[in-house]
Length: 105
Image 1 (cartoon, rainbow, N blue to C red):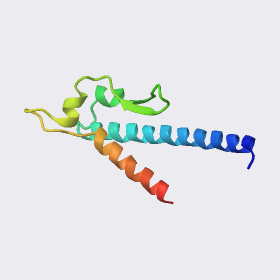
Image 2 (image 1 turned 120 degrees about the horizontal axis):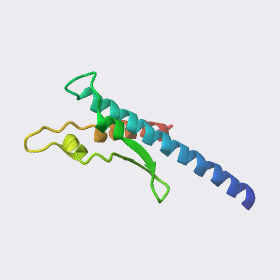
Image 3 (image 1 turned 90 degrees about the vertical axis):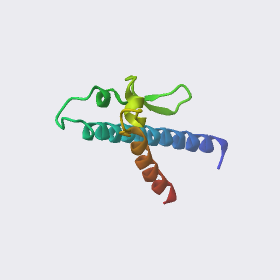
């Protein structure tokens, strides 16, 4: 394979990998939002936390799943007075399993 073809192939693989990472981050967002909504005291209520969960590209080219709600950590990990109601960690673990199975193929 000549250098030009190798470069083109690498560019295609990098683009495909970036799309896969974006897709995985979006799956984490969907899973985390779903878990937050399931944990609501009023099942049909509104959740500013769920609405705030989003995926963003980071400066290094990867993806981050985050929220701007300062209380999210207390929901995820609990406090002395409130049990943990994890939403992000299980969503990421679920996607990790999916990604691992794709890599094994």
